[in-house]
Amino acid sequence: MDDTEKIISEAETEAQEAKSSRALYEAKMKFLGRAGKVTALLRGMKDIAAEHRPAFGKKVNELRERLEELFASHEEKVKARELAEKLQSEQIDVTMPGRKEEKGALHPITRTRQELIEIFAGMGFEVFEGPEIESEYYNFTALNTPADHPARDMQDTFYLSDGFLLRTQTSAGQIRLMEKKKPPIKMLSPGRVFRSDDDATHSPMFHQMEGLVVDRGVTLCDLKGMLDEFAQVMFSGEKTRLRPSYFPFTEPSVEVDVSCFACGGKGCSLCKGTGWIEVLGAGMVNRHVLENCGVDPDLYSGFAFGMGIERIAMLKYGIDHIRLFTENDVRFLEQFKN
Ligand code: PHE
Image 1 (cartoon, protein in one colour):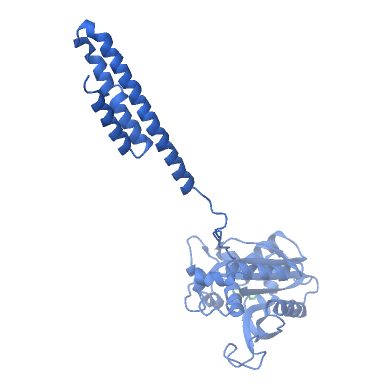
Image 2 (cartoon, rainbow, N blue to C red; image 1 turned 180 degrees about the horizontal axis):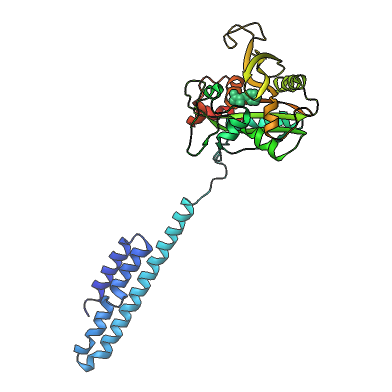
């Protein structure tokens, strides 16, 4: 029992060295735990002569009480320090500037498609979407382009098996719609199309916007008027001109140019000195196409147009390579925020 003071001073040293409440608890257990020194002393009681036991027991109890006090006072200090540290580290500085959430933006293709839809929706067009995997019938045959027709070579087609292909043009949607709906028709059909073609302005996948109007007495003049409205809104005040062209599904067929918005028609590098920029193909729906869809060409007439959405976006935003649309470079995409 001469050890009492030694044990107390050992406990004091260990308690002082314990920097956390967990370490302090472990130190306390070395003395007061089940396998601790005090318990060991009590266990040794049986080896002590009976007459000395009460005195021994008393001393051990005193020792235990002193140890308990000792650890309790350390516990208080450690807890107070830990709380202070916690409060310090979890402090919120309400004057700190906030973290900025970056806002996303619509992809330029999405944005251009929406703009186009808005323009034509304002003229009463409804959106109709056809499938990307098409049959040869809808993509070509019904559009007055049978298998042996040389115009099939105008588009480098990705063929699938069993008469199916990746549609090369949204014109396939004209047929699908006319099979379902009788005139009057005012359809706008946006979508992805596919052609084996790859350079700065062509990509194997791109987007088109198809337009189709069928009713009694529709003329090329109506087409011109609507395209002028489109050029006016899309290219801020420009006008259009029609040049003769050829598509198997329209007769007559035209290429549509927009007056050059870069030079106002005087001639510049964008319009290659002509004052005009080609933007789309169009024409009066070929009577064979109407017949193929069960529409009487003697009662009804119509016009159709098809434009590349990438082409419109490239012109409008001055984009010089079509691949920029699919590379997902944030530096490019960020420029379309507003
Ligand atoms: N489908 C044609 C193309 O992809 C464009 C077009 C559509 C032409 C409608 C005339 C009428 O080139």
